[in-house]
Image 1 (tube, rainbow, N blue to C red):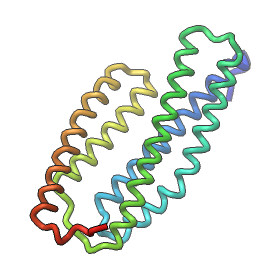
Image 2: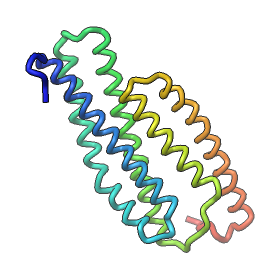
Image 3: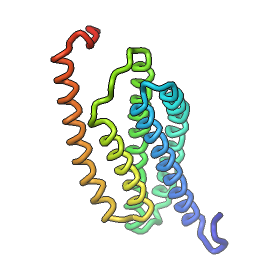
Image 4: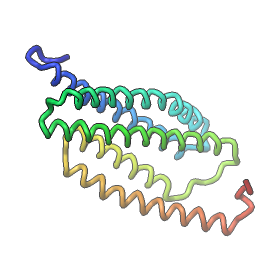
Length: 188
């Protein structure tokens, strides 16, 4: 609730940040569900997690539109100091990235559902540590946002390199497996 002395503009900025935090937490939860689903994709719970992701994604899209509307309204006021303008513009960029993360979680969920229709295979060794690195990266991102911490933001950048290395190792592992055993790869 807005402070009685708070201006309508300040109340709108507070609402903008609260909406952004809610969206960030929702996306973090969705990404975690996607990672859980892919890491346990041979178990019945994986499809349930994937379906939960599909149900939440439209809500994430709605949150992006609400935040965008709040941000545009604040910019339209033409009374914001430069620091607040930077915050509003950053919010617009962040919501776009969060929405994209939600879309990627949906893509993972859809793949988990399609993989559940195939014979189970052992997960590559790189998958679990990569998933944990992604979880940590998303958590640090949210912390950097909440606390406006450049230290956490820099840790996120370093984490990105770690996740990229896992991705490259995973790709090499899967490519080598497909070359050694081409019969397990469908032609379509």
